[in-house]
Every structure is written in C-alpha cells, then in structure tokens.
Length: 282
Figure 1 (cartoon, rainbow, N blue to C red):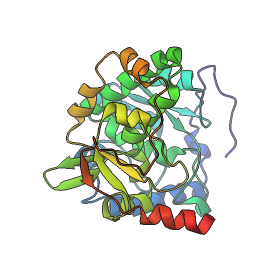
Figure 2 (figure 1 turned 30 degrees about the vertical axis):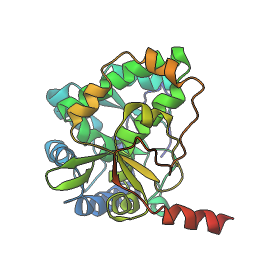
Figure 3 (figure 1 turned 45 degrees about the vertical axis):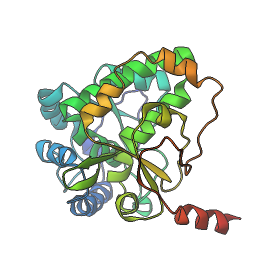
Figure 4 (figure 1 turned 180 degrees about the horizontal axis):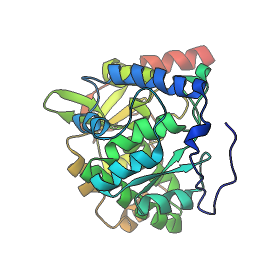
C-alpha cells in the first residue's frame, strides 16, 4: 500500500478504501487465530474492550468508526502514522489521548512477528485496553511522563517500563494469570509462551525494577512482570519520577533473565529456551 507524506505530527489518513483484498485477508487470518487463542488467556478487560469496539474479523477496522465508539468510552482516539515516530511526537500523542497506529499491515509471510508495529499489533493489540478507564488514564499519564523523561535523559529507562507493562504485561486475577500486554496478545507464539512455558521468570511488578531491566526485542521474553490490578499499575506511576531518576544514575542494568533477592517471584523460570537459543547461535 502506497504511503502518503505525513503531517508535522506524523499523522496520515488511513485511506481505508485503498487496502487490498490480500491485506484484509491478513487481518482476517490474524484476527481469527488470536481471537480463538485468547479465550481463557487474555485479561477479561482486554476481551471486554474487543467486544465493545468495532474490531470485526472480516476486514481491517475503519479508524473513523472505531474512534466514534472509543471516544465515547474513554476519550481516546486512534491516529494513523506511516511507521515508528520520533519519541517526542509519540509521547505528545499519548499525553493528549491519541494512540499512533501503523497504517500498514504485515505481509502474509510475517504473520507471527514483525519488527515495526503494524495496524494489527497497534489496533488489535493495544486499542481494546484503551477502552478500560484506568488503563486509558495510565497511558495518558505515561505520555506526559515520557515528555518529562526526555528532559532527564531517561528515555531508555522509561521505555523499559512501557515494555514490561503495555507491551508484555501479565495480570493475576481470580482465575490465574492472564495477558494484557499488546506484544503478547498480538502474537500466537508469545501468547502460548508467556503463560505455558516453564522457561521465563514471572515476577511481581516493581516500578524501579522494570526501569532497570533490559529486554529482548527479537524473541520471547525471559522475564514477565505481573500486576494484581490496573489500579496497582496506575497508582505506582502517580509520583514524581525525578527522585527515581536520580537514584538510577550509575546503577547497573539488570539482565533479561536475572532474578534478584528482592524479587517477588511467581514462577522461577528454567531459562531453557533462552539458553538453547544462545547455544545454537554460539
């Protein structure tokens, strides 16, 4: 699909009518796969968001129709962008309750992994949680915090918090662990690995721990962080981060698969998957 020049805020028109039958087919394949897989795996709040929004399986959603409903629920809306946008632009959108979504969709040979987020990852993976009032507020606060973090030179650390929560977070409810992170819910492989595998660590969410922990961008995660509620997540971030940033200066990073004596461990992973991949690469 041809891209059009973006506006100063990097937004573009979705141009829904220009999507091809093949592109709608990719959405349909991914949607059917994940909708079936996520029953009993995704957080009830995510599934409720899916049900509340016009995210049908037959075609890529029309963002204008989607926004009509989403705006009524939480005041958020989706804006289309041609790909990854600069950090300042991204945070500015979030702080104003706008979620930047890639306008393109992956190719048929990229069904389970794509490096640059596309409309399936962004809309199917992220937008259902934006229909949840507490999580919607967390995302807006994250955007405002991101703009501030730029002044402290702490974007790497704040990005790790985003990764551990928004992208790869787990939540513990009455029926056990469930997925809410978009990087998991939009991936067949990680939807299975995050909950079923003995390999990764699953530890309780800790704000500073998350900001110090490095992560895998090219493979399954070695450590997942678990919350008990979205209110817990929101409340943890409602503080002045300046003292946190000051404490983190010069403090060493934590490796992706490491466990600390201070961790509240839900599951101590074997790290068998990561070690096998390292051995093969070596």
